[in-house]
Image (tube, rainbow, N blue to C red; front, side, top):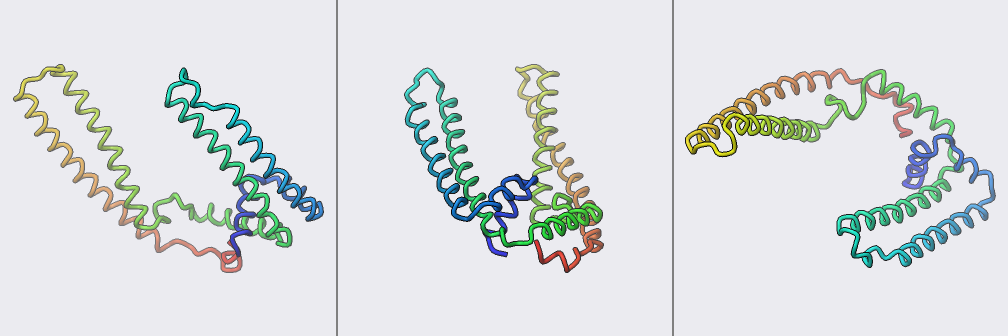
Length: 215
C-alpha cells in the first residue's frame, strides 16, 4: 500500500468517518475535483496571507511578548493545518478505485480482535522494551518529584524557613536515604512487574493473516 492510500485511508477513518467528503468528491468528475483542490488551495493561501498582512501583531506594543508569540504560533498552526487538509483531500484520489468498504469492514474486525485480546499499543505487554523502559523512567521521575515536594514542604512546615545548619545537614542526609530506599523499592517492583509483562507477552495472539496484510 503506497503513501497516498495510507494517507487517504488515515484521513477517512480519523476525520471523515461519515465519508461525507469522500463520497461527495468521488461522485463528481475528476476535472471538478482538481478544480476544487486548486480553488481551495489558492483561497486558503490568499486568506491566510491577507490576514497576516493586515494584522501585524508585532506592531502592537501593548500586547505582551508571550501573547504575540502565542498568536503567531496559532497563525502558523492554521496555515500548516490548511496545507495538511488540502493534502489529505488530494490523497483521496489514491483510494477512489480502492475497495474502501471491504477495508473498513476488515479494520472493524481487527479493532474488535485487538479489543478482545487486549492487544492495544498502550498496554505494557505490547510495548517494545525500549518504550517500556522509557515509561518506567518517566514514572520514576514523576514519583520522585512528588516525594521531593512532600519532603521539602514538610521540612519547612516543621522547621520554618530559617533552620539551623545542623538540622539542614541532617535533613539532607535523611532525604538522600529516603530517595535511595525509594529507588531500590521502585527497581525491585519494576523488575517483578516486567517479569510478568514478559511472561504475558508469550501468550499474545497473532492477528489473522488474511486481514493482517491489509493494514
